[in-house]
Amino acid sequence: MAEPPAFVHPTADVEEGATIGSGTAVWRHCHIRTGARIGSGCNLGKNVFVDRGVVIGDGCKLQNNVNVYEGVSLEDRVFVGPSATFTNDLIPRAFIENWELVPTSVREGASIGAHATIVCGVELGAYCMVAAGATVVRDVAAHELVGGTPAVHLGWVCRCGRVVSRDAERPERLECGSCADTRR
Image (cartoon, rainbow, N blue to C red; front, side, top):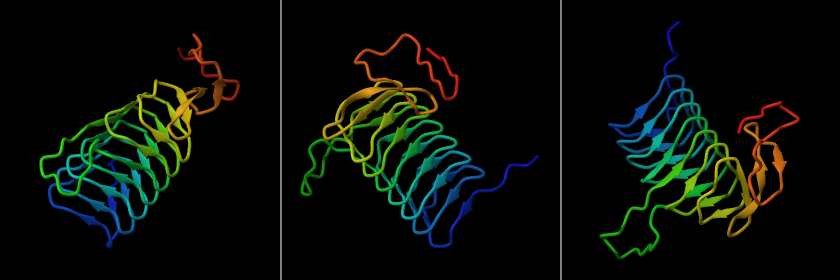
């Protein structure tokens, strides 16, 4: 069976040299810069900005008004809530021409809540969850739940996203009563 082509809304601005995978939907007023690579089966909501050189894996969902700046990479099945944003410069000044790009990595299955800010130079671990409105300034471990400004540890989540522990230390097993997933 043939893969469906990407859908790009007529109001979206996809620059030459950007790559969009099959089955991906790019909605109203999105701007995808040259050199950006978006995987297959993604959904980019209204007014999403994807900067040059950004890599977005397969099956990602970016809600309305998300900004993903140069230096950010999202692995497969990442969720980014409405109006979340990433930064890419630790010392921003409008008048500095030779600024330093600081990369950020978001691992497979991670979820980022609405209006969260991810300060550059961090890694968000696989299947972690960042609460709405959080400001992330440090690495987040796989399956860790964080929230607040600055974001602090709140617990551990299953692959399905349900909280399985509020302990400071990660449990040996992340046993979930909802999905019966018992991955380590």
